[in-house]
Image (cartoon, rainbow, N blue to C red; front, side, top):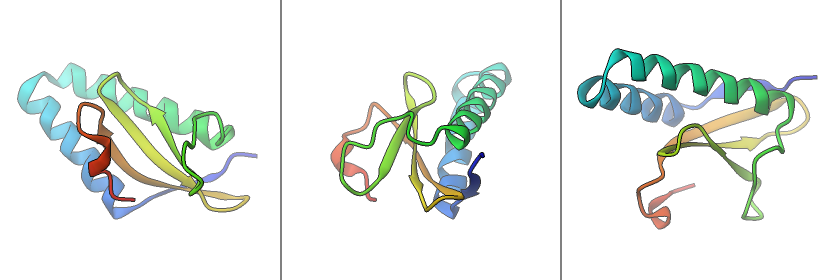
Length: 98
């Protein structure tokens, strides 16, 4: 059974920032590609939520969307997962605020 997906405000905001960046620096084609990949990954993790690693004991998993972008999410019990935020992998991971 697939988990219900909940987008946090921070996830919505950081997703929008990635889309705006792609529109500004790349093209609409790249935006569509990013959105498609994001939807595919979210679909996969809703079916198998532990398929991506959770290196810390706080149950936050990191799903690779593209080589430059990841999605951090948390399993919130048996029926829901929260999408926490999107992350530019070129940044210092110490800046992540969970």
